[in-house]
Length: 275
Image (tube, rainbow, N blue to C red; front, side, top):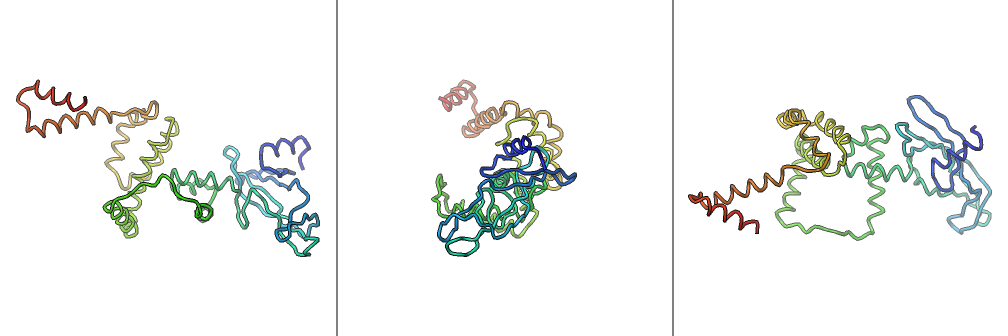
């Protein structure tokens, strides 16, 4: 057991409404285990909404929570079973921070879902916090909560775009290699679009290169040869894309005119394109 001051500090660090930390243990190779109790001594019957304080049974089990630094955190919770004084039927209390028959807290599920949206299921599961089965269950729970909401910011797709999407799905089902290559392509795009600092960028690109070497050997070698220049992008987010676009446009103007014998005419034609 920990002292009262320690209980207060650990409860504040845990930051779960209505939850009190009663003890803590640290196991090497496992993480931090916090034993918790509900602050309220009663619960409402889901049938008749009667307040009940008569405990019928105690059901203790361990769930996963947000990690503390690099240490995994587990909560030993007690989902108490009360007996209603009016309808004389037992019921289990509702815990706001964890769903029924779930082995993780709701806030952990929200963080994992956000990481999956930015990466993929297997890379998130490889961190060892949750399994792929738990991630799939999180996504299913989230989709069931959103099924009644109306979609917003929809993009209108043409027939050709829909056909392309459907064809891509078919190809990914047939060829696991092409599926992996497409996921790697989307992954590197997200790295450059959503990474703000070079330290994180270096780490993510390093992870990407370890997977991409099998499928994109030439791209892998290019990344290695120009690594310093590539990671410099994360300092200010600037690229040579604008210059390359202007250069390409100049070549297009020259080709569309079948060449210009007079440089002044070519210069005027180029300047007119950007006025």
